[in-house]
Amino acid sequence: MMRKFLFAGLLMAGVVASAAERPNVVILYADDMGFGDLGANNPGSKIPTPTFDKLATEGIRFTDGHSSSGICTPSRFALLTGMHHWRRFHGITQSFADTVFKPDDFTLAKMFKSKGYNTAAVGKWHLGWGFDEIKNENAQTEEVVQWGKKKNAYKPSAFDWSKSIPRGPLDQGFDYYFGDGTINFAPYCFIENDRVTEAPSVMMDTKLFKEIPEGNWEFRPGPMVEGWDPYKVLPTLADKAVAWIGQQKKDQPFFMYFAFPSPHAPIIPNDEYRGMSEAGPYGDFVCETDAMAGKIIQALEENGFGDNTIVVFTADNGPEKYAFDRYKNYGHWSSGPSRGLKRDVWEGGHRVPFVIKWPGRVPAGSVSDETVSQVDLAATFAAMLGYDMNAQEAVDSYDLSPVLDGEGLEESLRVATVQNTYAKIYGLRKGDWMFINSQSGTHSKSPAWYEDEHGYSKQTTAGLLFNLKKDPAQKENLYASHPEKVEEMNALLERYLAGEGCAPHAK
Image (cartoon, rainbow, N blue to C red; front, side, top):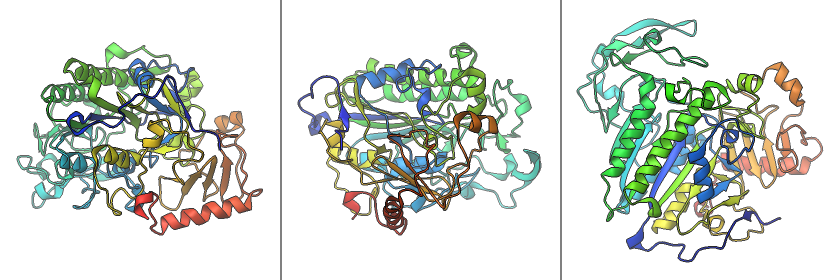
């Protein structure tokens, strides 16, 4: 197999920091941002992303990096635990749903905290809370119409908003949290640590908001703070992250997980970003996302943390279905060379931007085509911290150190990578091969004009097999012509689904 690591410049000495020089870690996690939206990945992108592109020139850019799922909650869970979501669940948490975590779950934040780090989560959580603990007896609901269907939604009076809300970020190892929970789910308010900053008192009504420039509001009904302005959410989150960084001290390292609510729908770029891209309002929203990341990175520099902070930039899944119209209207395909979008098991559902800037370790301008997953951050940072991970922790996580250090790998670091969004349909990546145990990887149905233009046709085989090196757009199904490869990959997938961990330390 060809060497998997390409780099510019010589490897730098002192790749492992001493205990006194423990690097800070900041994860910037975009929401519904496609691989092809990042300029560094796609020279033809019609969206300027100068902050993220600069990160890529300062660190290592992965061309084959993946989230665990094609939707929000599962990928976030996998990132924080080093464990694929499908071992626990598949779907997203709904408004007022309980936590997806178990009390003894390993998380990145718990690991960093155990090693003396200050820890913070800012932004979208979407992993559940213990709202039932603050629900009033005989909590009342109101009948509303959502997407043409009647449903019942909790009224503001259903909860005692003066109480602390358990089972949120503070219970997963974070010392501090500030965010809106999930931008398109109730309650519509800010939460700081485990309490709302202002009690919701009215029901959400999109008629009260400034006009949306693209797509739909995507808001679920429920309690809202009076005067709530969704356009202020992203800038407020960035300001809170900047403020928290400004409170940190040089003698204590920190870990911050900043989860953007953008460019997820509702697509709501603020006025100063309108027209910045050539890909419509969505492109402008990506520009605003990039600018907010720039504020956070500038805060690191201004507070003297720039040379000792690892910055990871990636996204939870591929772009939303509005990408089809964006392609037709602006000639910009957010998934880059890949087929598929958010929710799909096709590559476009889970192949995402993935950049790691690691001063003093990763040479600037490095590029790797190694297949990596967000679950791998757990084992990688455990190795950095000297954290002794047991066989039950981060069971799907590989230590990326050989890739970061530029070792010439003769074979892929990972044995295989599993992709999944909904129950029963899985993709297994092994080397150049992608096996899907279904007749289709589609959930976000493609328009007929798009299928015709790209030469996609309905498949009749029981499963799918593609050589991604030769066929990155997944057009040529090799399932029937390579039965031995199908059998081999299906057998490995079944072993993982039966409980075997993907990671070496979990065996």
